[in-house]
Image (cartoon, rainbow, N blue to C red):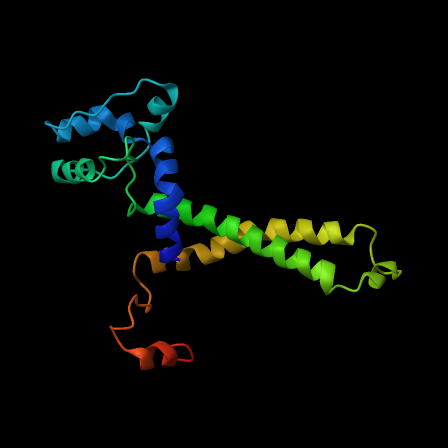
Length: 180
């Protein structure tokens, strides 16, 4: 899930978080810690609401490196990628989107190509049974997301035995780790 989160951050989520929790909303509190890096202050209602959200303390060094790396991006988020509330919310949204896509794609294909439609004429088949099954699945998705979220978060934070490169342990461990 860490790879999915990284790709999503690169493509979409960095811009989304920059609009939802902009760094400029915390201009006054961050300017106190960074005397030489002025932030544009924003007086919109959303920025005033967002300024009350918790955010990680950013030192002068963090702000300088953030601004140095962001010459092409005019907006920055006050919540960096490694901030746990941002990761939890991003993983929740990605998990819910993914579970809905998986369910509707495979359930739709199964209904169209595998399901025996003659069974719908059986006397015990409810009139709106397909609709009820879909509703039951949709109500279960948030609970399933809450059950998997701690595992996804732990993996993103590095508490898994997964590794990025084959050169770390070799090809044997790559294939042997699956059954192990």
